[in-house]
Image 1 (cartoon, rainbow, N blue to C red):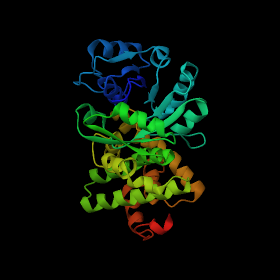
Image 2: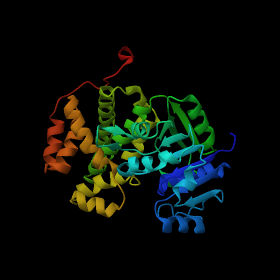
Image 3: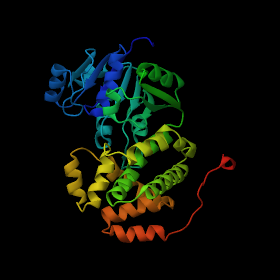
Length: 340
């Protein structure tokens, strides 16, 4: 067991709550910051996040608070579990409150529109003295708090940070694997949301197992191809943060992106589908940004382009499917040992 740390988790959603509860259960003094004072008070009193993880009791060692300074000013390790659209704002609020050399780990799977910026890059820009990492993987929060065996990835160029977070969150049911490719791990977490919409759509249309297997495999090829153009390591996509997260998100209706795809196939508008889900669906914004970047870099991404046509260009699903099956018959495995 590592030396007890003081931990802060910023964000009142399901994943932030799950991570905070692991740290607190492991004996670390843990604060979970929530922007909404009423929500924080309710969680603190009830020992349960009834809005996001109803029915799961939280550790008595976890303190929910709406006071950001209380949460982070003495923290050794800070996890930021905030939707991407508010991520930079929260990073700026945190910056003057942190101790020197605080470890700050993003768990957010998204991309900021300006400059196609990933969350670790936002942290680098806003927190000049912090030690930065990324936590990502095939992780549904409901299964984590239910003590289902789960693997995830902690990525950083800082080996001490990796070791610290591994020990901090290690439990009999939660295991963290190390990776130095921070950018690739983040890209995997963001890109898979696009393909979860695709597979949700295909499933709702009654596509069979053959089709879903093809979509998953070609999705992985697109992700690796895109990542290589952005100087990430395509091999990262063979791990938990790549193919692991892709399989999870593309095959379960616990995924908001998957459910959105199903709703679109059932004839709902994008606006109605997002409204029905009631939480941020990161894949929609990610799709816009990735399509623009792929066009800019001339990266061949037929599945992402097809989904963009359906969601934003009024293409019919049937026409898009016909076009995909009549498109270029590319090679199966694009990267082999000779490429590295």
